[in-house]
Structures are given as structure tokens and as C-alpha cells.
Length: 355
Image 1 (cartoon, helix red, strand yellow):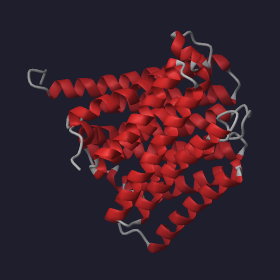
Image 2: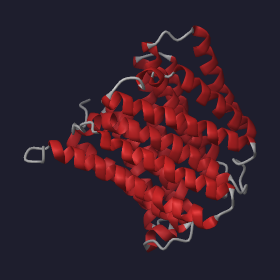
Image 3: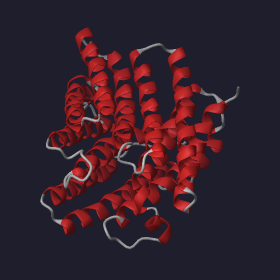
Image 4: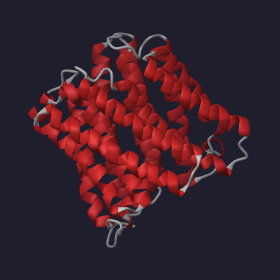
């Protein structure tokens, strides 16, 4: 079956960006910022908008492009639709059902990828997709998102770790290191199933250590250009993952803990968005066929991301609400700076654009 042309993928990407924008504004509403009414009303689904709707759309779109099967695009379509429903005030059940259908689609696409290349990393990617489904079902069957959060976090963590594991084939990685990686994946899944926040935190620290030690980014940081920028994004993201794990060992991943915001955003912003910043110049052209040229200006949003996130975490740890509040606002502005930087770089290389 023929693949969807790049032009047909853009509306799906738009739905994802809409969920991102709505999710950011909903998060700001939770910190007493005045935002448009739809976003304020969606404050209770900030997490689902960011993880299940935005990242669900983007990751399933990337997977659909990878396997080049038209049916696989139903997954990002369903994920994007779930985000629109959550923002539009539709019955919560509708958003939950569409999100679960999207996760099923991603699992199916991941199994196709595994059939084509039977490797550890494709298994990990499929497990990440399964975690998304488990999280969605936990949210659907539970009274709040608390039971879904560990699974949604593993959806993102395992997806990133699986993709990074694929690239370790370019390095002389010891067989023992691969066995340790597999054991760490098992530990994380066991911790989530057991409901042990501290065990999950320990697994995150160990995985961060593994990635810092064996990811090819460790070698690429000594290069130049885009390769070095990607490496800087990855390595800094792994540091945030370790910080989240350390906070988790102190109990910060538990619902109601005063440091929970710090721990969750160390993962969601520090780890995950650092990966987004690093991979966007590669993934976006693969999806849209629009090239993004490298420029050192890409370091600006990356530096601002880390700086503002550090302020947010310090505000959370020190119980300084105003610092946490304003740092969260600048977190959102950093995403706008990143998108604006990308658009400017694309326009600079477009016909008739500035050289």
C-alpha cells in the first residue's frame, strides 16, 4: 500500500502542535496564569495533552513514515483527534478512547517494524508503545491520571532509549552492556507494574548512566556542526533524566509530593524536550521533506530550556511559588523560541529567502 505524501502528513503534524500549544497553556493555567478559556478548562488534562496527544501524535507519525504504510497514519490521526477533543471540551471518554485507539495503531506499526528488523531496539520501541496503551487504559478505567503517569513516562523513555540503542551498533558496545540495557528495561517495566516509585526512579538513574556511557553522543560531542548539537542535546537530556531519578528516590514521583512537579518536568522538559530539540532537524525533514539547515542559533533555545527548567525545579524544591510560576511561563516561551528558530532557518534557505 502506497505511503502518504509529505503534504498529507502536515495536517497530522498540525494537530500535534495544537495539542502542544493547548497543553502548555493548560499547564500555565494550573499555575494561576490567565490563559484562553479552552486551555483553562483543560487544565486538568495537561498531562494527557502533552504526552498522549502531542507526543503520541508525533511518535506515531514518525513510526508511520518509517514503515511507509498508509493505514499506520490512522494512529497519529486518532492521537491528534484526542487532543482536539480534550481542548474542545468533548466528553472525556471520547478523548480517552481515541487515545487508546492511537496507541493500538502505534503498537501495530511497531510490530511491523519488528517483523522487518528483529532486533532488541525494535522490541523496546514496541514495549514503549504498549506502555502508552497501558497508561491510556489506566486513565480510562481510573478516576484520575495518577495511575497512568508511570506508564506514560515509560512510553517516552523507552521510545527514546530504543531509538538510541539502535545507533550503538556503530560503536564497539560490549555484549554485557546490551544485556544490562535489557535488564534495565525489564526493571523499569517491573517497577511500573509494581507501582514502586522509588524502584522506577532507581531504574531511570541506571538508564541515564547507561546512555551517558554507551550512547554514540559521547563520541559525537567532539565533532562539529549539527552532529555536535545533537550530541549536546542528548547528553544534557540524560543528565536531567538522572536528576529526575534522584528526585524520585527522595519520593518526588509519588502523587501529592511537593517535589513531584520538579521530578516530572525534569523528565518531560529536561530529558524529552532536549531529545526533541536534538532530533527535530532530522525528523522534521524526514516527515515533511522540508530541510532544516544547521546554524549555531539552535543552541539558544537549548540553553534557555535548561536555564528556565533549572529555575522551575529550584522554585519547586525551595517552595518558591513565584519562581516556579515565572519559570514555567518562560519554559513555554522557550518552545516558541525553538519553533521560531526552526522557521527562520527554513525560510533562510527557501527560494527568495535571505542568504
